[in-house]
Amino acid sequence: MWETLGPPLRAAALSAFITGLVLLLLNPPSLDGLGGVLTVLAGAVAIVLIAAWAAVALIGKEIPEPEFRRLVDRSEALASLPPPDRPPSEFDELVMQALDDLPEPFRGLLERTPVVVSNRGHEHHAYGHYIGGTVARDIYPDRIVIYQDTLERDFGHHPELLRAQVARTVRHELAHHLGWDEHGVRGLGL
Image 1 (tube, rainbow, N blue to C red):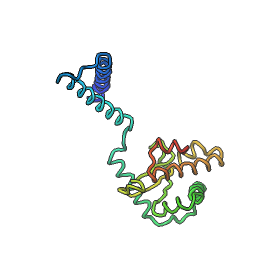
Image 2 (cartoon, one colour):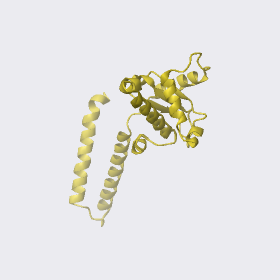
Image 3 (cartoon, one colour):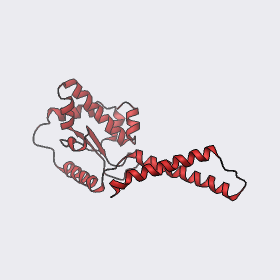
Image 4 (tube, one colour):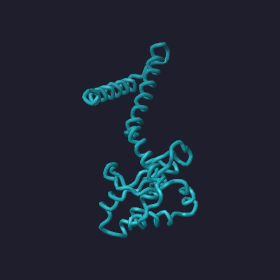
């Protein structure tokens, strides 16, 4: 039901807010009486509520808790497995090289953070995924997942381009581990 009524109600609320704001700016109330003070307070509350709503809307949707738990549980299970009997694949080698190329202080931060290669990037529409708190707020087990399927799909036609994008993805997810949000990471050029 919210999918049907939500957009018109949001549009009506936004229209009412803009109309009220324009009227408030064109005909500001006097602060002499109680009515004027209440009008200014109601306008301030409306501005705060609309700003809070806009901030929440801009943040976007979070991963649902069951999906997050599933990813964490799967990552924990993969991390607890012994090393595979087979030698690392070429893609695994690219990820290991990207990790080895990190400056020493950053490699130290990843000593207890597993980096996992997965073929489920198409499900998340991503090249990589950081799962966990951050270095500052370590409330979840940390994992960095590099998605082989999407990286090879988009960059596998050119080996050097694939190598560069794997390195960029590793650094991008490391930046999330350090506490940067998506906007901040993109501002770093990652």
